[in-house]
Length: 49
Image 1: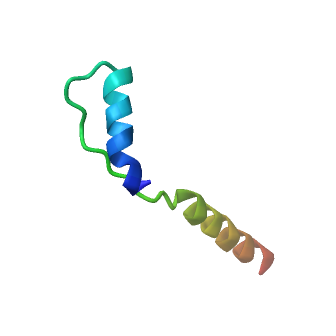
Image 2: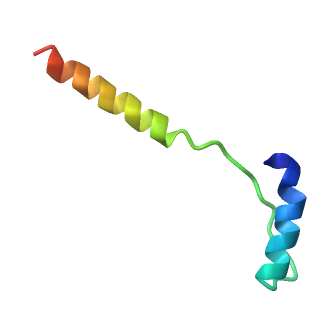
């Protein structure tokens, strides 16, 4: 993804009719894994009762 930032910015500026396009950063979203870990932890707690 990071290799295509320039292309994405260019396309965004054309499609959104923007003269200046903000810099784009891609950040890995780990919220699904974090949520699943929490669900597993709660399940372990309730199973041990």
